[in-house]
Image (cartoon, rainbow, N blue to C red; front, side):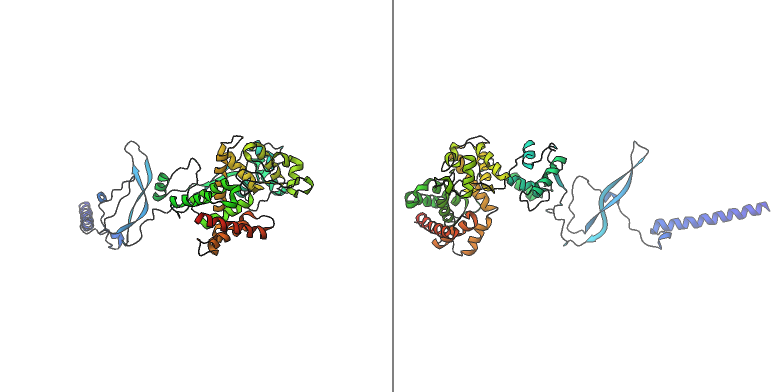
Length: 435
């Protein structure tokens, strides 16, 4: 009996072994998995899928392009018993048509802004202007307007409520000084940055090329030789004509500006009053004379003989009052109010923040400020002139330039009369320079 049972058990074991061997043989020879419903599993030669993590690779043109995917795999190190998990970028088996667009290498992603805050001021300050000065910051109206916009006040006008809001933030150390978005550069941008000329001298770069240098020189010579009735401001007109033409403005538009300059001022000159009786002065000049002895110290004089620090201090006091009490004109276009303060800042930049400026430095500062304003806050002056004049090289275009510049840039009192007068000046200057 025992022999019989042992023989039966041996027979069963041998039969089972034979079946398992047959199944195993089928799996090896036919790549059949009993658990996969006879689905064929592709064989991948891992030696052909080596990826260099430090370099990109180019697909051969006769092979399908593979979509990138992320594969998490386990790597066992030789010196450690523990396993490390790392993420590799490899390729899946999803085919993509070779005609599909490749990755856009010029595409950029926007990063979070980098924010810099002002250091907190002392909590005892009740004036935003004084608080900004205490931390060494420019407290001018134009600067406060920029600060306000950075801190969510888009319509800043210097009201007490707006200044208090900014002051409170400054006291808490949360007043934003600057924001910048650091974005990855495209290859083209990198090349542009590498070849960009650094303008260390703050010179004026032309925005378009219209005339040859010899043509410009001829026009300037015509103005110098035949200036006629405009002789009293010859130096200023010749300098500004050269600047504007070399920058790329048309002769007619340049003439429109010059026609207004002749009706306004000279480089570095303070607004003058023909009224010697203080009681007959305009409201603004009366305030200036009552508080700063304007008629004696400044009227009709030039900035070259006055301390820039002194003038800036006066302007900041006037600005703190919202320009409602007093103001005065300065320079070839008689910048007034907030624009006068901008001009003085341009003066100081030219002098390297020293107290006195010379004529050449003032010429440079005023030229740059006119160009800057026409390219920014007053850019509609040029655009509107271009829209209204299909022919830009005519005396009519010069006349219209004189009127548009007067109405939209200068905005003087008695505007109707002065616009016509300056339009005629522009037409005469155009003809002098063109002849």
